[in-house]
Length: 270
Image (cartoon, rainbow, N blue to C red):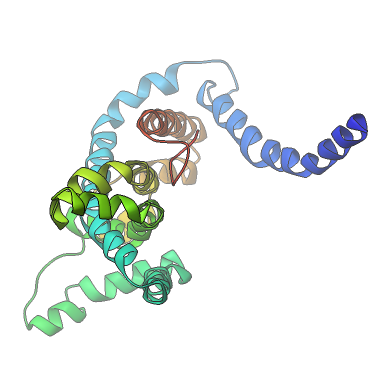
């Protein structure tokens, strides 16, 4: 019976294993191969060594991603707290409103932001003046926050909503007001959701390229733009080397986040 059960489990797992190998393991192997070979297919460290010239782009990408993640956290935590404290029927409405923009394609959402922030866009028309926003770092950060804010709110909301209500009551009985309860009870218990949200915002922010292309106006490049340009121009080896470094940075950030997170209630597990 155990052997038959094990066979059935293997058969059931086979499609998932095939999918993982085909679309995760194999692409990683291809990236590593191109990163450590030259145009003739010979083994070389030249691509990795040449990445020093892209250090400013890496630095700028990390800087904007950290700023966008911090803003998402500052906006997302209070929002998640408000939703979690609302009545159950109202929570469903708030979550639907939060997720509603996500039903629209990223490209369309980004073009919409361009239409709002452009020199002749809705915002400048409303203010009756001209603020040059598109083509600045602020516009790119705004786009990141707009697109990835739900990824911060949802895991934090999940954590807060799962906190035992007796914790709230016990804090109140011990003399804590709303602010002290939030700081001393809710914040520590929702830390895994915060870590999960930070990871879910930081990773796509640092690797984005479409948002920076459209809202950055081509005035500067992020690392995602550089990778795309390398592949478009046929510099596969350099592009693969940059992609490999990006994957290592993301894995490091996920590992660090995982060290401070729980396995449950919205924590990240790598």
